[in-house]
Every structure is written in structure tokens, then in C-alpha cells.
Amino acid sequence: MIRILKNISKRILGGLFKKRDNLKIGFYGPPNAGKTSLANIICKDWTGEEIGSVSDIPHETRKVQFKEKVEVKHKGKVLTFKMIDTPGIATKIDYEDFLKFGVNKKDAKKRAKEATQGIIESIKWLDDMDAVVIVLDSTQNPYSQVNITIVGNLVARKIPVLIVANKMDLRKAEIKKVEAAFPEYDVVGISAKKGENIEEFYESLFKLAKKI
Image (tube, rainbow, N blue to C red; front, side, top):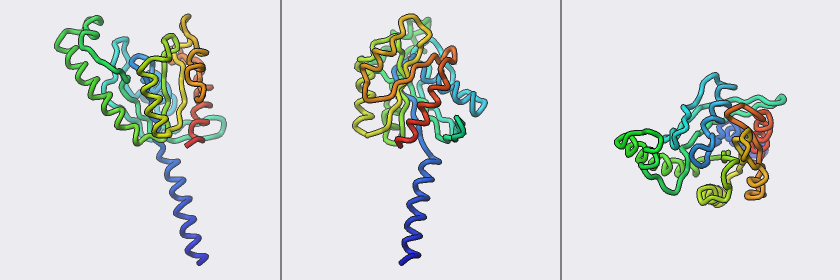
């Protein structure tokens, strides 16, 4: 009987540690909020490599991107996880939106199709996430349909969430609006472009991991 209990305990503990070693943390948010910029900072800090390219053109990231075993160290603690950087979530993608950025019609239609497929893939990936970092543009209205849709999907799945209010270096940035829109979640303000307040982000990331 004792041996059986020991074996059960080993399996339970083993399962817990295995899960902690194989955490999947997804980066979600609307287009051009700065998901990939933040993901690049983390990857460069701890792996020496970026995860993807960034651009002023919406939907630069059109496929789900991965970085295996990102190991973050902060105040004597270590967090290892699989980073999943997703395309910007949008309720509608029109190829004509890309034309405004000088993209030719053929490439614009290709981008729009790829972006749509990327969004579908991103939503499917939610079922595999242990936690999600939602990156928002702090200069934009946080009550948008896209943001509410993302949060609604996460609430339904009971996935722990950290909200990042990005672009805090800009004059129109308003972190209080983001906090008011999502009072049930921790919100951390950063500037991924300038690398500001990243230490506080790491602190919040470790708090997020504890909720898993």
C-alpha cells in the first residue's frame, strides 16, 4: 500500500513538474500593438535571437511563430517556457488596407489571405495555451471589438492572462484606460520600441506563471 501511494505521488509530482517545464505562453493582441517587438526583446535577452520581423505595415506577422525553451531569469528565479507569437487578431481584413502602405495589389491580396489564415490558426492555438500575454496599444481604445473578443475567448477557457499596455513612450498613451477596461487582470505598461519597463514586465510574467 505504501509503495502504491509513493508511485501515485511520483506520478502526480512528475506531472506537475513536467507541466512547469513545458509551459506554453502565447502572445496575442490586435495588429501593430507590438507583440513581436516585445517577443523579440525577450528572445534577444535570453536566447540571443529574434523570433520574427516587425514593420509599420499591419499584419507583418501572418503565421504563428515559436521559440522553444525560452529561459528567463529574474531575481534568482527561472521560468522556462515555449513562446508562441501570434498574428494580430482582427475582425475584418481587407486587402485594400495594405495598398495604403505602398504594397502592390497582388501582394496585398496575398497578405490579406495569409493574415486571415493566421488569425484562424491563432484562435485554434488557444486550446493549447497555459497562459496568455495580451499586448495592446495604449494609445488606442481598449474597448474595441477585437480586444473584447480575445479576452472573451480566454475567459471561456479559464486561461491566466497578463495585459501589456505597450507604446507608453507616446504622448497619447493612457494605461489607466486599459486598467479600467480590464480590472480583473494585471496590467503592466511598457515601451517595446524603446525597451522601457521590461524589468517590471518580467516581474509580472513570473506572477502570471504562478497562476498556471
